[in-house]
Length: 353
Image (cartoon, rainbow, N blue to C red; front, side, top):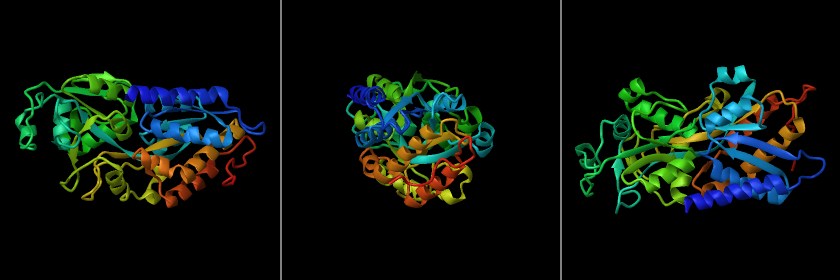
């Protein structure tokens, strides 16, 4: 079901790039590539924006690592990454970044008879599973946390992202915060050397691999778990509470974010305090070059992002993403003044409407 849904979205998305023509005075196409984490909402926004404006849009859902690579190579108009670049890296690449939407990464499992939200896990347990220290589902460390569940004497099959992934960055950053052993032995990045497990490409690949592998555990952006009806686990958060992954718990984590103090919007939302906070929450970011050789195209891209901020909140919430607060949107659009054409003039002059 999940693969069919995403295939339909992707087909519709790519069809827009082929069949829809924008106004003659506007750029013909916007191209972007990167994170699979926000793909469901970017596709939904693009479809609605195309219906309103006729603008062509082409987004390649290839993973954050690929998005960073393509924007650095200037083969796309914007890159998308769930791992924010540090200010020094932005400066080196002549880039700016901003957060577009927020969401949650969730652990999903494939255990017969288990319903979503029945299994409880901690960050340390997750780390120990992916370290290969806990190998059976009825291990005492898991069983003691879930006294009411009949856990099978079944091997755990960890699934991870095989591509360079911001989802992996968020996940491994969280594991590094809650497990000193994970931090020392594996660390955090868009791609790490997982001690054990099998790889899947994209959130789509991990969702598919986890759904067809008995005893599997994986990590995916929540929209993928929800759309594919995958069984997710509850996680113990910073305050010791076991919480459900949903828009409420993602919003609770996001509420503690102070974007005004984040240089170049570099901010991570994992393991946030608050009894309702989901511990693996993150933002997804857009990357663009400060110096634009195609200012008309860049302006159309900014028009799309502006429209999405102002009109896409309800669509985002329907997929359990968290829209950026209005005060953050204002800061973001102020930052767009750094984008300039060859004449040195700012490309963004304000909301076109």
